[in-house]
Length: 164
Image (cartoon, rainbow, N blue to C red; front, side, top):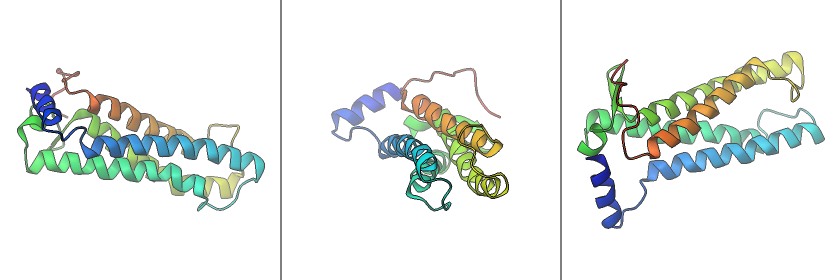
C-alpha cells in the first residue's frame, strides 16, 4: 500500500518528500561540521561554543528534530493513509519508525551541547578521547542516520515492532 502511494507521488511529479531532503541536509551538515570541528580544535584549539563548526553539527539535530517532529505529529493527528499504514505507535504518537529514531537522535544531539560545553570548560580539549558528551552526540548522529535510512524505505522493514 505504501509503495503504491509513493509511486503515485512520483508519477504526479511531487518526488521525494521535503522531510527526507531535510534529514539528508541534516546528515550532510553534521558530516561537514564534524570534520571542520576536529580540524578547528587541532589547529586553533578550544575556542567558543559558538564556532561555525559547532553550529553546523547542531544544525543536524535541529533539522532532524523539526522534520521528524512534523512527520510524527502529522501522522498522529492528520492520519494520512500512506503514512499510517507504515507507522508504529510510541507513547500514543504514530509515525514511521525512522522518524522516531531520528527525532530521538536530534534530541540527544541537542542535549549533549550544554553538557559538552561544560565538559570542555572543566576538563579541556578532548579530541583524542571519547568523552561522555561526545558519546551522546555520536549516538544521536547514528540514530539520525539510521532513522533516515529506515524512513526512506517505502516498505515496512520492521513488521514485528508495533508499539511501546
